[in-house]
Length: 134
Image (cartoon, rainbow, N blue to C red; front, side, top):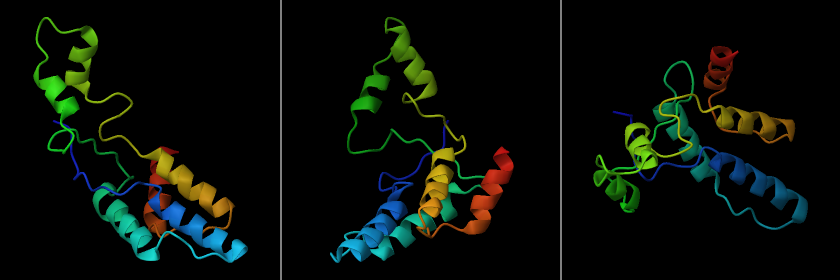
C-alpha cells in the first residue's frame, strides 16, 4: 500500500508563489497577495511530513478524498476491465511515482534562488536531498 497524505496538502511550490508575489509587489508598489504564514506553513509541512531524513518524498492519495471518481473507478475494476484500468489499480494514478523523490521541489527552490527569492525550506533538508540524488 502506498503512503498517503491528507487532501489539504499544500503545493510544493506554494512558498514560491508567496515570494514571487512579494517580489512583484516591491517592484510594482502593489500589495503582495500570498501571505508569508501560508508559505511558512507549506514549508513546515514539506519539512515535517514529506522529508524522510534523506529526501523529500512524494506521497500519493486517491482514497478518502471528496472527489471519489478515481477511487470509485478502481473499486469496479475486475477481470473484464481494460489493461489500463488494471494497471491503474495496481500502480495508482498516472504520472505519480509512489514514495519517490520530489525533485521538482528542489528544482523550484533552486530556480527561486537564482532569481534572488529566498524560500522557507530547511536548507539542511534541501542539501541532503541533493546529496542523496547526486
